Length: 327
Ligand code: MN
Image 1 (cartoon, rainbow, N blue to C red):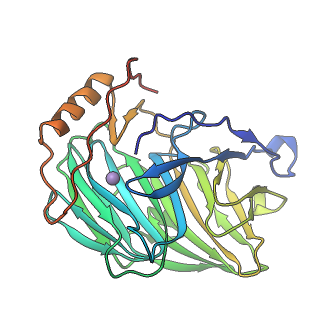
Image 2: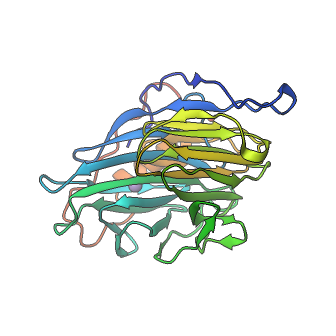
């Protein structure tokens, strides 16, 4: 769960074909591989050296599809968080969440688990013994603003989320608002999270907020993502392991899967997050001193236990030898 591994430089690809006056560059950022818990390999798309956050979204792992019918599946033992919300989202499979508030919740595709760490919480995530063969999903973090980062911890499960038709696309409003449909999930800065399903041979034309920046994942396979007035024009090519990043000022997004079965996308967006952060291990803070204190609190057991979890809690890695600086 460490964020300290080096990240590759972003690869800037061609943008839309619009005139220079309305030209908006779409960057494509490459994931780095990371291991989570005992045997789950993830594609880590945020944070990047070149892109710390997308709105308040500050961490994004995409994993699977993995065959978890044999072996342990996902096994992430109890570990702490501060200063953030975790959003768990599945495209396939089943995950069991437990936390130090006593929550115990299975999550299925199309449902949102949203945990607010506030000042501190511990949780675990594991593949339950009875589970589908395939596991495929996202783990996201949302940085809490300073006014909320020491709030009381909380956990919410949202099984019913708005789903709307938008042209040929089907859009699930996971967080925030889209075309008048509001997710029930409580967030603390202006942001949005959408799952977008597009049939083969079709394209989605999503309305974007020009005051938001956006990140776009292709969930299932190769696809095109383009920013353009009217959502025309060629885009950049993305696939699992790549994320398109659109800066503020773009009002439309065209998404077209290349595969014969169509494809799904996950879109994150938000007002650029102005506060500087220090992210280390599972903590989001503002200074290196805070990080050291959170680490000591975890070592001293001050985050509480996770009832029902049979696993040994994760030990924090050693602090780096160089000061952790906000960025
Ligand atoms: Mn976690």
